[in-house]
Image (cartoon, helix red, strand yellow):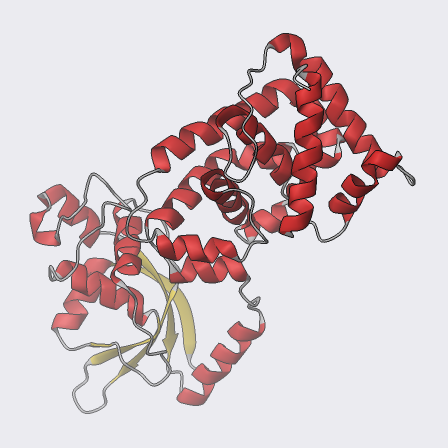
Length: 350
């Protein structure tokens, strides 16, 4: 390989190369998977918002017979196909991704918006004079540094619809809350943990306590096209987290309930008491400020029982449910029962 450089080109350059026969999209290095329309819409929306997309890798050489520059896309074929399809009017942006530009094709856009699209800068790693062996070596090295996708990252790659978009958009609003209270670590957030955790809580709000995280994918698929309850659920999620913040404040991070699996149970109990939860006995309660200290005391007491080597006999079951298979429905049900009873006692509802 003679040289390489990262160069930024506007989309308009790629359109020109494509029209002039200087761009080769199909090479045997590129995977043949085809993006769904939702994935393409998500990419175009990202471009229209002037947000970054992944680097494109391109091999550049000169045809010795014609003297024409040839640009082969080594990595980024699906991104460029989506860009060209939008430019030609073959696809449009979904309302899921951008309500203002929903259902607009490129030709429907104002000149200013068309220029924004044309002038978007694509970052390209240009390989000059690289042969096939060198390119395969590059791919091998890149893959050796790549982490295996976790379950949430796989869902992120597969789905681009209503529920997934809602989960990613809304969960981002609670990053500071999750971080400040040590509910989620930065390492987990980097691997999309906040979206997964938020999705679990939303699913519990919709359909009650669940067994493990595997159910998240089912909801991404079920509500990929339509998710009409998002506004109501967003409001209720905000109300529950605000109530927890108001009651526990800085004390949350000093209890066992800062752990994500146990915060799941705490959140679900407060939601249950505020709005009712499927599969649970209904209690209509309010949370006057005069009860906040007593609620904190009860929750601190429960936390202490879990951290004791030998808890009081009536909390042995609760301790086991907090330290065993914490994602199982059985353990979640036990925790829900004890936390709910403690809060009801603090409210004088026993």
